[in-house]
Each structure stands twice: as C-alpha cells, then as structure tokens.
Image (tube, rainbow, N blue to C red):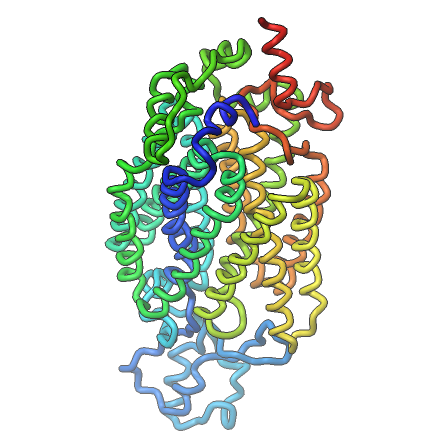
Length: 550
C-alpha cells in the first residue's frame, strides 16, 4: 500500500461509503454504453435501390426489370444494383413499342444512369435513419463512416481537455459538467435539420462522453481501496458500460425511428442530477493540491457513514518528494519529459490505438453481419459481460503484461482465422469474430486499469486522458476499416488481426505493476526495460526514506 492507502485503511474495504461511491460512479458508465454505439442503429443502412417514380408510364415488365443485377460479395450471387438503374428514357421508348426486357431487348445493351430521382429503402428493419433521411448512400456513402469519425474526433478533443482540466480543477466538477453537456447535446441531436448539424452536435457529445467516463474512472480509482479499486476498474465501470450497450439493441428494436431513439437515450442524463450531492471530490487529488484540511473532511465524513471513528490525525506530513511535487503544476508535457515515462507513454499509446481500432470496428460491424441486426448487436454486447469478468479475474491474480499479451494475441489470432473460413460457413465465421471481440474487450478493460495503475497521482487523470486521446486516432479510423468491406470482406479482419497480434508482442515491453503500490509521484513509477534502473517503489522503501529523512 502507498502512504495514502495505509492512512485511510481504517475506513475498511466495503462499507456504506465505498458501496455508494462504487455503484454511483459505475452508473455513470451506463449511458456511455448505449450512446457510444447508438450510431449502429441511428445510421443503419437498409437495403436500397434507385427509385422509379410512380408517374412514369412504364409497363410492369420494364418496371420490374428497371434495376440492373450486379455480382454480390458472395461469388456467383446476383443482386439488384444499389446505385444505378437503366436509363428512364430508353425504358420508356422500349415500353411504348411493346418490347419486353430480356426477350426482345438485351439488357446489357441498355444504357444506365445514377439514382437521379432518389432511392427507395427497405423499411423492415428501420422506419428512419440518418442514412435514409439524408440519402447517405452511393456517392455520399463516405458520409456514414465520417459521422462516426466526427464523434471520435470529439473523443480525441475531450480526452485532451479533460485530463488537464480534471487535474487542475478537480475530478468531480469535470465529471458532472460534462455529464450535463452530453445530455443536452444528445437531446438536441434529435432535432438536427441536416447531416452537418447532426455531426456538429455529435462531436460535442463525443467530447463530453469521454470526459465524464475518464473523470469517473479516475475518481473511483482514487476513492476506493486497493482491493475494490481492481474490481471497480475492470468489472465495475466496464460491466455497467456493457449493460448500457445491451440495452441499445432492445431500445432500437422497439424504437425504429432515429429521432425518437435519440430522444429516449438522452433522457437518461436526468438520472444523474441528484448524484452531485452523493459523490465527493477525490481526497488524493486534494492532497496533491495541498488541501489537506478538505481531504481530511471527506475522509471523516466517510468514516461517519461507515460508523467508524476516525483517528485524531489522518494524514501524516507528506513526504518531501510529494510535498515539493504537489506545488508544481503538471501538464501533458510531463508524459514525455524523462526517458522512463516517455517510453512507457509511447508504448501505451501504440497499444491503446490498436485495441481501440479493433474494439470499435468489431462493434460497428454488427450491422454488416449475416442475420438480424438487433440480435447481432445484442450478441456483441452480451460477449462483453464475461469478458469484463475475465478481465477482473486476470487483473486480480495475474501479471499485467501476461494479461495484455495473452488477450491481444488471442484476439488478433482469431480475427486472422476468419479469412480462412469458407463463405458458406457464415455462422462459424461470426463465432470466431465474437471470440475475437471477447478477447479484445478483455484487453480494453485491462488497458484502462493498467494505465491508471502505472501513472502517479499528480499525472493520473492527464495520463489516462492522453492515452484515451491518442487512441482516438484509432477510433476515428475504425469506421473506415469497416468501409474496406466494399473492396474485400476479409481485408478489415486481416488488418485488425495483424495490428492486434503485433500490439500483443509490444505490450511485453511495458513495466509490471502487479502487487505494486499506486504511485503518487513521477519518481515512484516503475521502470521501462532499458531505462535507468531504480529501486522498485514499495512500502518498505518509503518507510526507509522517511527514517533517513528523520
């Protein structure tokens, strides 16, 4: 344990205070689950074809044959074209003189044109989506992945801002401010008059969403004791995120109009108004700012809630190292200042990027899988529940490096195997994809917890936010990984699998944090292989330093 953990150990591990903090902070991740992936249904692309206006004087034969047949992604299968039709003037000419398509007229000789009158969409799965409302298909199909990318650009911006704001102004105020922003702008999206306005609002939603998720995550890590910290970081937040994700296909199934769906999802933000009075600020953060009296007041209130008598003096005089460091302002540049923290940061950024690409690409790909889109999305969410449980088990008892390597390498391997499955074994390919999703989700949960463990209190929120920010390069490109399906169905899996396997190997270079105390200062961080070795930070080392100082 670190000094802080030792000095607050009298609170116990699982009293009323810890339970309240645990469940309320986990609850903030619930709307994150369905909002982050709502684009699967909000931007669902149903089967479509060129519209043939009803007023055209075409015979039934020509109207039924007005759309050319093209080869599908499955070799040998022919499907109606989504982006072209036979030229209307030519069809009218043939229809007027009674010639039949395919009998009197060779259709391969009939000229074609684009969908100049718009498209007609299959309404069996969706009543309305932003794709059907603003015709984001064919020449404008690039706008659909860009919509998701704009949201993740908001993630990137929010990750950059939230860490520094939270380390400067406090975890709690940033958490609730961004919760309010997310609720207001999600509500406004339902009334967006155009695709441009929708994307602008979606950017702010992404910015706010990652901000409150990271703030809640770090706040929980700093409020809870070491044992519950592991449960919170691996199972708690992630499990509630997964529950929100599981709710999404259920809501989408019953609310098939995208505007009504957005309204329904945004109303969950109202549930968090009373939580402001139930969640305290982080005493660790207050101590790092020199506000010892405020930190003690929170701990005494927690002791009272747990029906435990607090000692007369809770916090001993801070170590000289921490006392000098708390007065110094820290920022994102400190993540690259010394060789040790620089190499840890760069390695984590690379691994975070790969995990984010794979996780979001697989999650967004559910609408492209064979079968019912709502069931596929629910299955993708359901797979995450045992994954988060596995992450807790691995994080609780096994080496961090081994956990990261095994999950990343396994996930990448299963994604690479998909390309070897014959086209007619669709469900076997989906099974492999879900196993890959399970492994990558486990790695994602471990990454958040490991990052919060390896960085010190003075930089923790900035570090987690920066890792999240840099990884948004991956999430921004993730929708376009799925877009590559239009060229080759196997290409996204080959790229994701290769990158994930390589990241698994790269993770072996990271320092081990299993069984180590949570560092408070940069000097207490574990070392990166090849950097200047130092004595590992342990409680006994800290006590020896204090005795020497005395």
